[in-house]
Length: 232
Image (cartoon, rainbow, N blue to C red; front, side, top):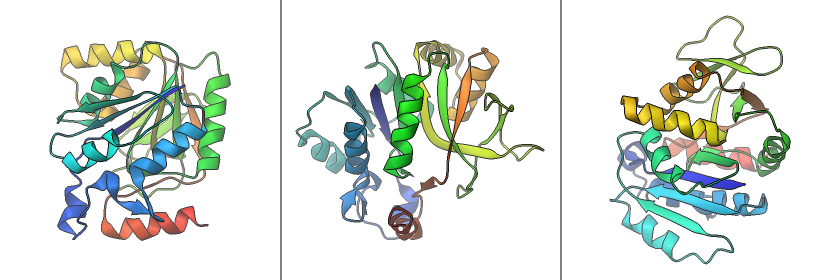
C-alpha cells in the first residue's frame, strides 16, 4: 500500500489566529501533525509515502528532507490552486497497486485507520474506499449518499434525505480512479469534491468506510479539540 499527504495549503486561518508554525508542523500531543501521519502510515506497512508542500513552506521542506525513513519518501514542492491539483502532482509517484491519500490536518485514531487500511487491502472489487463519519465538525462538509451496502451513490454539498455521512478526507483509490483524475485535469475540473463526483459519474465502485469520528485542524481552538479526541 502506498500513502500520500497533501500539505500544500497555506494554513492562513491558523496564522491569522496567532499560530506561528506552518500547519504541517503544528504539534498534537508533542508530535508534528505531518510526522504523526508518517508514523501511522509506517505502522500500516507503507511501501512508500508521497507528500506535497507549497513553495513557501521552507521549514516544512527542510523538516521532511531531514527525515530518515525505512521507505521511499517522494517530496513534491509546488504551489497548486486546489487539493485536486495537489493530488494530481503526488499521484505521479504511484506506479501500481492501491494508495491512500489524506490531507495533513485530517485527524483520526490510529486503530480505526489500521482497520480501514486492512479492509481496503482485502477488498478486490472496490475502485475506491472512502472514509466517512457521521460526526460533523467541518465548516463546509461534503455529504455522502450511500445505498444499503455502503456503496457511494452521490457526493452532495447539502444534506439530503437519507444521508448519514460526510466525507472524512481520507481517500483509498486504485488505478481506474487515476484515469478519472487525468480526465478531470484535461477538462479543467477543480476541487476534490468535483473529482469525486466524476468518479461516481464514471461508474466506479466506491465504498464508504465509517469512522466513529474524524476532525480537522483549521483553527487554533481545533488543536486542543484534536488533542482531547486523541486522548479519549
